[in-house]
Length: 589
Image (cartoon, rainbow, N blue to C red; front, side, top):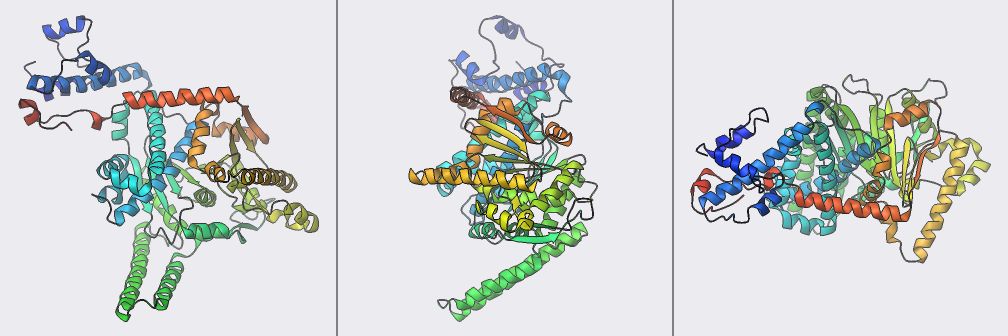
């Protein structure tokens, strides 16, 4: 008790092997029914109801209770899992899909925060603008600007972000237990954050981010979904564009494939030509604006030309750094990802996105899987959510060949009543097209990879081969059912539910309902079955309504319990030396 408080806490932090000597008073206190400290801060506070912040002794007691309770809980977790220090995080189907879904949600939230920071609406904008952006800096930015963030984004949108953070923290807690670590220390030591963020021209081009996760040992490229008017314009440009097949010459592989024109140009358009076109269009609009004076018009022209020069200078800097020519957005993103993989050998490459982001992820992953860099480990993994179709039957055949060769893994997650994954499509007119022009059936758009369809009554995991006639009939039947359901929603004035089924929130709810069943599967095991010749439905689970309701209640109760008991480092009361020596602490942080 005569030792300084900091020295005592340092001794406790050394582990179970260096036990702190106990005085007679401490030994006597431990033998009584009321423990000196507790594993739970709330329980310890209730066990000492006489604690008051009106004296030095009370302040020290509160500090000791908080710190010792936290340290002992850390030691208990370490002791229980001491033999499993080398255990890696689980990579079952449920956790891999959920981690990708987290990234697809975070990129939209981060992009909104960065936009507010650029508009000078946030205090300390460097917390979100300076890279790398870690979860700690995001929390600090939100805590400082909470009212501005919730007002600008809306309480509902911010609530979605908080829900996904809760799920993310729970999975990290599970990883910490398996690795024999404490969650707080694991998160502090791990490199988890955004190392590249492409949103400088978010109204004029695609938005992407590159996440580094040293816990799961992966680098994740994430694309944002449809947000701006240009995003919607690219979605609607569903014109098949013929491109050269990168693996042409192999048996059964055509020389050309056709892909969605809007998605392709977003990724592979020439960056320099695109910037020149953007500048010319902007100058033309300035010249046509009659409300501007000649001086203002000249200033805007000069600013636009400076932006064009700055973009070219950035591209030249990237080319100097990477030692390669940067022709398109794909080249830039791929070289940035390879640079991170080079600094973190053994890490795997993941690509993900929601809606438009899922389509871009599919195109990006198909090219990344063929990249010859030694730092890109195969297979590359792509997990998309509510993604529209990207390529034709020839593209599907090429994708399947890469899957057979172990170059890529693809999981496509969607809700059963979501109409966006059914596009682009000719609907029932495809049957007429096949009858009149059977040679054009291979030009019809088709999905690729393993499909996880989440329904209100269960889920289906399936994998369809490239048989054009079977895909034609199956997709036609699905389209007919989709139109019937659309008519039902319009008739009963419930058209807004169509947008709800397309959201990440609904995907998360259904994943939570079936997490026990989904965690029994593994992506590698599913591809092993596919290589053995299994196709069609790989797994089907049907759950009754009462079971789903009970699962949802149990899950919500568990989340509430974790919110009540979970204590992070920043939530613990800390005292400076002056506050501990004063009679009344001035501030508790």
